[in-house]
Image (cartoon, rainbow, N blue to C red; front, top):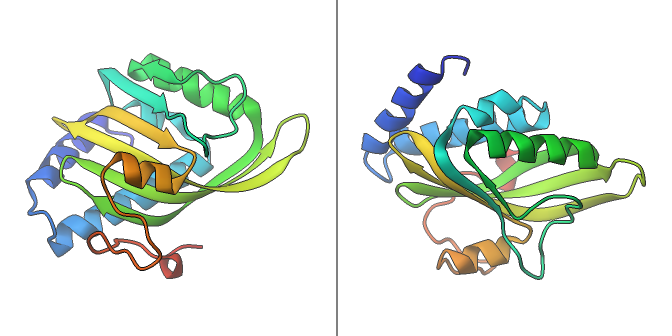
Length: 178
C-alpha cells in the first residue's frame, strides 16, 4: 500500500478485531500473501514503511539458520531494514517466498514459509522451510525474527511442532498456495 498513514491505521484497526474472528483471519491471510508477493517482486518500500524507528529485524541463529552470506544478525529501524533488504538482494540472483501457514498470536504472528533461492555468482539453488515472526505495536512492526527452520521458530515461540499439529487453526495450507 502506497499510503503509509492509511496502512498504519488499517493495521491498528486489525488489532481491534476479535482474535479468531473470520474477518481477522481473512485480513491476516491477505496481508501475509500481499507482503510475500511484495517480497518476491523486491518491492522493499512496502516493508520499510511498516517498521517503527527502533524496530529490530533479527536473523535467528540455530541449526537451520539461513544460508545468508554477508548478512548481519541484527538490523535496527527502517534504515536497517532497508539495508537488510539491499544486502539480501545482493546475495541472491533470484528468490521466492511462499506461505505455508500463518499463526495468529495476538500482537504477533508467525508465517511458516518456503524459500526458493539461487545465489548470485555461484548459482547454487536451494529450497528451505523457514519462518518469519512479526510483533506489532500501534500499527508498526517493533520486532521481526527470521528463522531458517520452522521447528526452531515454533519452539522459540512455545508452539508445538508435529505433523498433526494444529496449534490453533492454520490460516493457510499448502492447498491455498502456488
